Figure 1 (cartoon, helix red, strand yellow):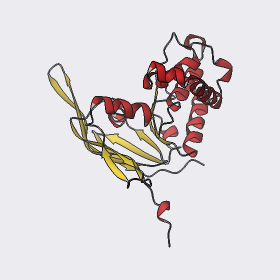
Figure 2: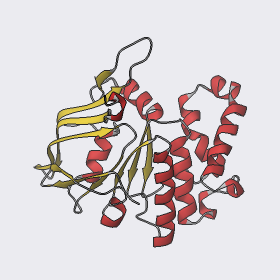
Figure 3: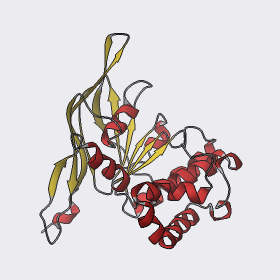
Figure 4: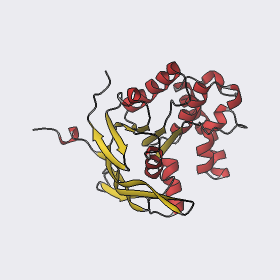
Length: 253
């Protein structure tokens, strides 16, 4: 008998997702009913031409924006206390969506978005500073610092703890951004063109890091315009005319 655990387990999905923007009183449809499911522990690449809605889709999935029509659903594993659930999350109250962004999702952007006045260590700890009250953060500061140092070491930046973004290379800034995205121990990592500002060798290094994180069980959803990078994912979804097409792809050797 086949072990049921060998079958893919959904982690995040979209249902008939639509997003339209208003520009100079003209309605511009970007997504037109996107249906897709990301499986738990999967490395999924989303590709498409410029303006196809790749980043818009990622922002909707990570609750940075809301759809005009459709749903984003988070699939929660069963525990001893509750059965598995499929929860709609795009229409939750703002404070609940904020909490999900801080705890369930990790974000990596092409532009890094590091705070220039903070050191690498402080930037990496910033999501925990936002999550906690001043008293709560102060109470757990040693644990959080140790956690941040461990993650910073994992991404190869332990020699840059006290450096500010202006003192880092592009690859180092992206590594710091990846470390920051991991500090809250997210379930799902959303990466928007994570190698777009980097030279080819540094881009390969970042891709290798993302693949190693995925190999440890982290679900990764990556937007990229680079078909060579996308080919290293478990599966590719291509956006065209506001809709998604699931493409067959080979697992990278």
